[in-house]
Length: 292
Image (cartoon, rainbow, N blue to C red; front, side, top):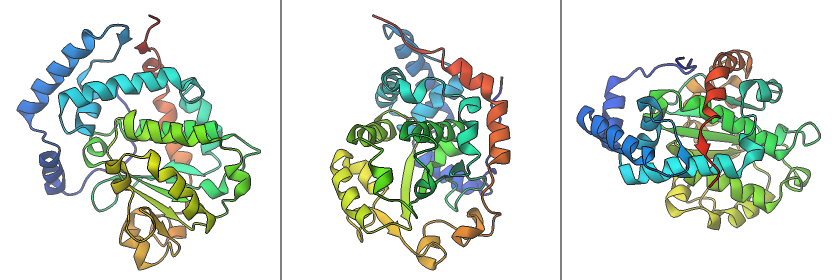
């Protein structure tokens, strides 16, 4: 069953060609790398992995066709699925639909000018009394799983906008330190995506100190991907309708509430697309490490 995709296609062939060069992808390298990675996975004990080309390309592109690094990423991906059952058990569109209908989390339908997919999370709008931090992260993970079905997103990467307007200590109290360690671990070591930027907008003052605590848990390369020298290594923007924010994310990709030209956030179409991929995600859950 082919996956249904949501994002608008790339409008610039030159953009895709330049990015393919950046990640060392060519037809000959692609074919040889898929064959080598498949062989490695088929000989990995206690692991039942998908080995079809579309799946393997996610990992090869995320690691710029370094086959050994892609092999480690596949193993880490499945290890995380086994370790973090609170996230991956029941990771299905039907299970996160209710959360998505709050319109707090989504995959925006339009790309930025660099061809990257945009995940928008309104952390400050989250009501911990409605659902817990693991449910929030499960929903974010579902958005990411949907995003990387798209080959253009695999090539060009993903940016995340985290709107923390309204975020308070009542949110932080609900999240033990282990939760943040888990999020960082999955993002930088256990997921086949090219994370290109994190933009934190509408931040309260206390968040800068909080981010300073989290940064040491991130690898240097990962910090750089979310960094700006102005605020302790993290992009933090208050004027979401101003030129400062639009320097990072074009208004053509943003909802009106962020100074963009698109309609206000409504997950109805996104949820409909996810639901049509239910069986695909259900089959994905059948793979992984077996008991030793």
